[in-house]
Image (cartoon, rainbow, N blue to C red; front, side):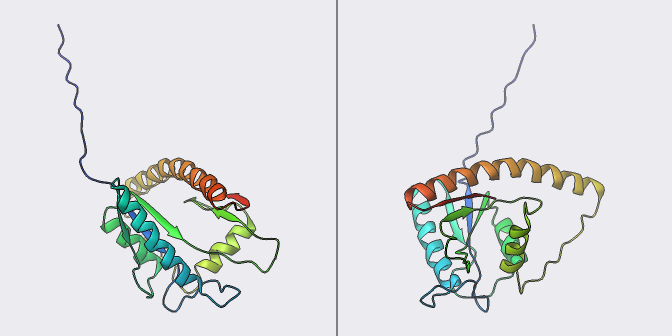
Amino acid sequence: MRAFWILTFITTATPKVAIDAGHGGSQHGARGICGLSEKDVTLAVSQQLQNLLQASQRVQAFLLRSRDSDLPLEKRAELANLEGASLLVSIHANSSPLLESVGVETYFLSPKASSTRLRHLVDRENAGFSQTEKAASSLLQRVLGSLKLQAAHSESQRLATRIQEHLATDLLAHHRGVF
């Protein structure tokens, strides 16, 4: 007769969601037709998102930027990781010189931009911030990092698709896609 032990690990920790209000400080981002800066819009939307998520009592939401301040991209990721965030949501309000470019679009973590247009958008969004990348100290760390990225990629894509569908439907906005 064999004895089998089934171990069930139940986590009581509430998942943490880091909310990144895009731009800030000297980085104004896009300018609206009435002169409103993207950094102000993203901060207001981020604060509302934090309130909604906190009210659900299913996650603990925190802002990476709670006021108009410069916060480099590297620091944003570092803060999310230090706080043990399960998810990082970055809020942006893009613009286009083309009048027919209207609607909502959702981006998710991907190892590479899928088109020239997206590479230009990423470059524009990240202008003014250094893009230092620390090399992994060993082959094992690089392999493990790659595996984590692959697992996160498919989950991120599924979440981005659901967010995009809800945004387009709830805002009655043109569905521009998931990238």
